Image 1: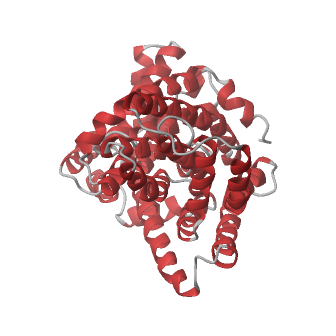
Image 2 (image 1 turned 135 degrees about the horizontal axis):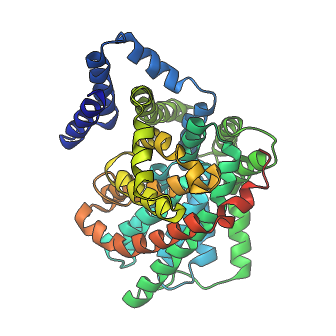
Length: 426
């Protein structure tokens, strides 16, 4: 009875476009009231407990790092280096967009921040160079989705928090899949650009590439510090996030001198607001997860899938389908907290390492960032290009196709995730 009320209330609130955090919180509070064994104060306590974690401190810190990097002029230098690397390809700006997104993914940990920081510069540049506006937005949305796969990754931090898994190993496991996805998207963008006759932006020059690299070296220092520190066991993911904030401030204020003292307060406010949205979702979703655990919902759902088949290949395909659908309709953080307990309950039957499972889960939800109605990368790109979601959704289809292929490779070829992960101490 409680399970049905919880799920029906949640579906109804989603259907009437209630904000994600409020919908989950209201549904959870209603279930507590109807269940009757707990005081409503338990909802507040669980909300607090759900965010009271050292690991989750990395979330606002990584998001704030991305905000500082953008304000500090670091995005522009990364884009210039990406242009020197791949601008000579047909439709060079499209390839530059994806490579820039890959570099920025190593800084922010957020797909939305990735899409906004790079898209604000490159979508107008592509439109000015004669690219179709909806194609430019589709390229940026596709590239932005890499932001949660290449570490640091906020969804991976949340997955690690939920499962007690090493966040450092999850980060390492996301490196090769992120590169695979980036190269695949570049191939698709370049092929379409070639068919459309979009020109390159530069000719390849080792000298110019070296100059651009030297100019962007400090900008690229953040991902090197973040990943190097974690992979070599120098500091934890949370500690690396704090160091990245300090590094970004020093570079933005004293080296590039793009950030002034008067700019700090608005930056802190913007970072706080952005982080609060994510943490509010985590807090309410933790109440939902608590009720789901009491009602044994994850085990019931896992049992339902196991009842369909006990073949690991079939089960992995079913999990991918469930996650792809969930990513389309549910915000990423909420989807993780609602679905990860069910999926991890099936690990013994899947025959894969939980690290690989984490990358599979995050990749599925990254693909959901390209699909309406909850596709955050799609929404950010639409807001920049001023195109309709329907128009961009059509142009995203070829990119979605290659992402599905990449997802199957990540799902069934474990070395692409586990080789790097096994280099990190457990």
